[in-house]
Image (cartoon, rainbow, N blue to C red):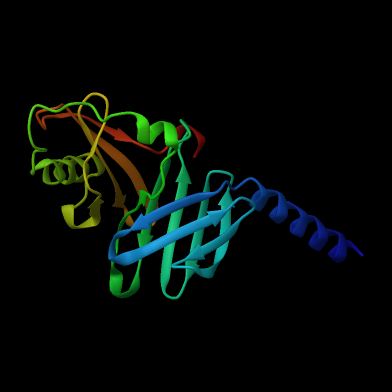
Amino acid sequence: MKTLLLASAAILCAGIAHAEIPTMNYSCPTGIELHVDQGGYAYLNGKKAKLKVTSKDFFTVSGNGVSVDVMTNPDGTRTVSYTGKHGANGMCSEANFSAAAAATPAPKKAGPMPKNMPAYCKGEAAGQFNTKPMYIQVGKPFATATGYAIKGTGDLGNEGKKPFQCNFDQNGKLQNFQSLVNEGSL
């Protein structure tokens, strides 16, 4: 009887956790597309995928040799990274934007986006995490209200993957390095 009660409680908790997952769409390098419907129905490249909820702020979608990790940051933003076949990995970007965001013009920049920001970000992250740059993955720079930003992850072995963000001014000068992990709750 206790076993049946425990199994029922586990299924109920899993249903509640999946119900809290909102609808989202992300595109990852190498042509990987993630779609999650509210309630936890997940798809990779249009095919139903397995969803594993680790906590209210972290879940993994996997299928066909691809794994996509979704972490919700304390400020409500998400950090989404993938690991694909043959060790391919990197950061994913949101695939759809709200009508309000699409209607808001991007801030005007002084000139073309500086090309060396990913290298600076990777070097800064390697220094902050005390690891080699080969264990750091960075995404593409994107415009912000004050300049540019790059999100990435540092693979710290036994400590896991740590998401971060590098913030740059409009000229491409590194302003700060920001960990996207709430270390206080670990």
